[in-house]
Length: 243
Image (cartoon, rainbow, N blue to C red):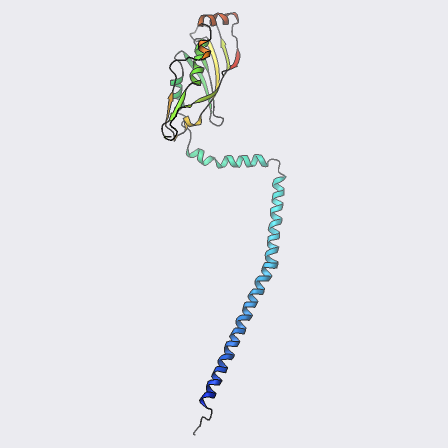
């Protein structure tokens, strides 16, 4: 069977272009429809579902905030939380308590004995009680604490002397003239300390005065006069602040 192609070549090219145009137009319509569908879906989600979700979250936040505000112990809770946050740093750098014995050996006069020491690192305070040969020696002990300085050898930028102790108070004292021992004067001293002297990262050197020249020593009567004064009132107990 013999077939003859009577369609001109230009007509064939036109039909091919027309078919390609239809295909492109169809694909464009499909892509546009899908894009519009995605846009509508996102719009519905943002305008309805997301706003609804945010509104619920906001209600939960307001409810929790009202509960916290209504808690009368909120300040205490926050204080405890802040203190707990400092525990890791405190545990990683514990104070060197063993330095206390070295400090006491450097600060205490030979005629003064110590019966108890209460060291509070939280309040940074020390309470010392004991006995001495006379009240003048107790005053000398107090003046020694007042004028003792320290230097942190590890802190090169601020390598200057600083007071090691402050707020030194002779909280109580007494004198027993009938005592048969060599320490008839008893005392209790409270004072604060610079926490740096117990810092494990610091290298501390104390500068203890060798000669006491304060008004409390130079201006006071002799030891015999003091002892005679307390003989009149045996076992006198009082408290005073060392300025």
